[in-house]
Image (cartoon, rainbow, N blue to C red; front, side, top):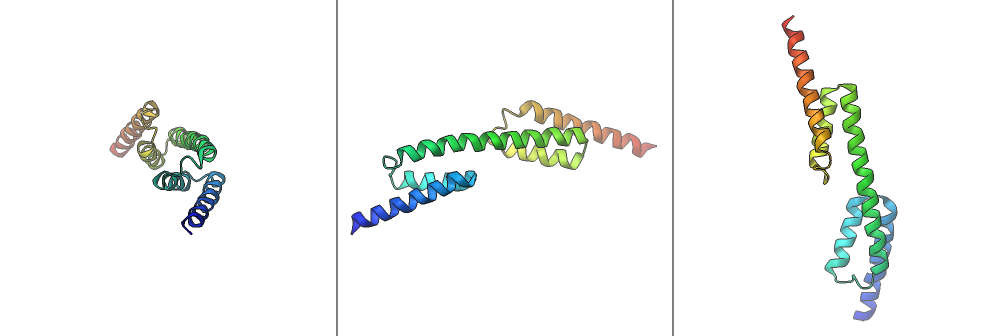
Length: 123
């Protein structure tokens, strides 16, 4: 019965992994891959794990592009609150180093906007 049980777990994990790859959810995918590794089923899921790795790369790139776009749009709009949110998101992301230049520009923009606000408040 332990063989049947293992087969059942493997087919359940295979289903979860396929669903996670199709869902575009980084967290779901990460959770299933961690479960597979924890149960030491890597050898059973070689092909699927390769697809999962490709999906991780794609989702990571999509996420990076989204954060980058958010920073750029907030700076262009010169919206202090939006810039602060974008900076926060960028600093929490896994690619904070890659976005360092854009984060610096965003912070300088906030400084400029605050200086302008202070000057306007003086008049």
